[in-house]
Length: 223
Image (cartoon, rainbow, N blue to C red):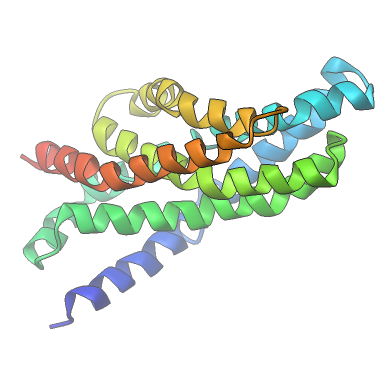
């Protein structure tokens, strides 16, 4: 029988394959990425070509786009595995729900947060964001997207099995992620240097709490 770290590693590989679109389709990691870039492309058409205005507001728009893109994969983070009985099988093999959900948070971040960070320079170019602001923005996304991933997985666990769970998940994600959005966008303002520290702290709290909250939600759904 495989040891627990090996089992979790296999689950991690499986989760990454699914979230990247190798299984279940539904756009995989491409759809949130395209949505993220579409917002950056369309925003200049809405406010005009004023480079100063775009540079002043563009970083906030990128954070809003990242938040909205985080909603798109919620319906396939937990519910398909719960319906298929995978969590029951993992429990029988001695894997706790908390450990499985921690692995899923990491996989979700790698398949969601990292592609957004790689696409951010393209979005920054479209929004006339300068090099220094881009560096701060990337650092903010590095600190904040793990928190977004953790909140997303937790909400997916809480809404799994509910009718219209995807829509409800989106409504829950937005208010819970507002502190990350505020700290992330605020770090780019004059005198907002502490925003990155607050963002990292809020994200760390979300990552620390999420496996336990999501694990409890999975156990409640299985009972």
